[in-house]
Amino acid sequence: MQNQPIVVKSPLLPMTLDTFKSKVKKYRQYEMTSLGILFLGISFLVFPTTILEDRADRVGFDTSCLVIAVVSGLIFAVVIFYGVARFPQKRLRQLGLICPNCDKPLVGNHKTQLSVIKTGCCRFCGAKVIDSAA
Ligand SMILES: [Zn+2]
Image (cartoon, rainbow, N blue to C red; front, side):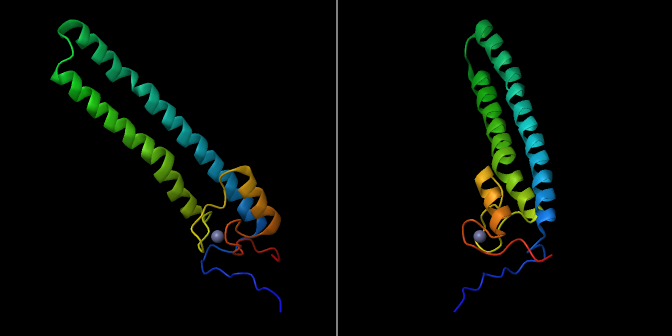
C-alpha cells in the first residue's frame, strides 16, 4: 500500500512551484521592509535617551525620567514584537506560506524553503503544498 500524501484543505494550497517562488520573493521584500522599520524603531530610541540624559544632567533622575524610560521602553517592545513576530506571521498567512496542516511557516530559513521546493511538501508534517503536476 502506498502512502498517500496529506491533502490540505486550503483555497491557496497546493500552489504551483512558480507561485510559491514568487510568494517567497514577495515575502523576502516584506522582510526587508520589516527590518527597515525595526532599524527605524531602534534609531528612534535615541530621542528619549537624549532627553533622559539631558534631564538627568540638569535635575537628576526623577519621576519624569522614569516615565519617559518606561514609556519609550514599552513602545520599543511593542514595535519589536509586532515588527518581528506578529506582522511577518500575518503576512505569511496572507500569502499562504503557512502550512495549513501544522501551522508552521513554509519559508524561514533557507533549508525549509529549499525542502519545500524540492519535495513540494511541508518540511514539518509532509502535507502537500506545491502542486507539481501543474
Ligand atoms: Zn505542515
